[in-house]
Length: 139
Image 1: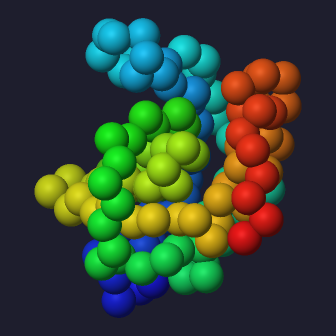
Image 2: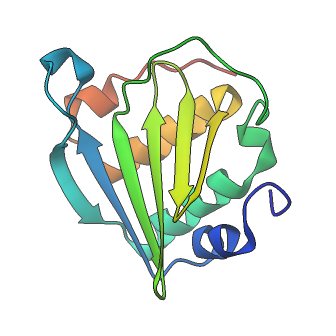
């Protein structure tokens, strides 16, 4: 992953000072996306698990493959390390993750990490019915 992400992006994900998560409104509401819950600061243990999943190459199908989907991002992460910020959005319908830091932006398919990421966000938002309803894919 260190060869795919910029060094500063990798460093921020690997050792964040702050990691916050928010749940987003669905596209079906016909309005611009906004936070429907949060952001909420994640505890250090959960942030460490999410960082490990994000940096695990086995979570992804590859940076080059494209899907013909219009994403409906449901979860947003804000990762802060010093003055750097990394923003990550997850679409669990298409299994596409969008990552950005400054001018760096990338999308990647996370089909292989779907269940792992879904479980981590269930841990972060255990009472949210939408998050609890993310289907398992057994990849």
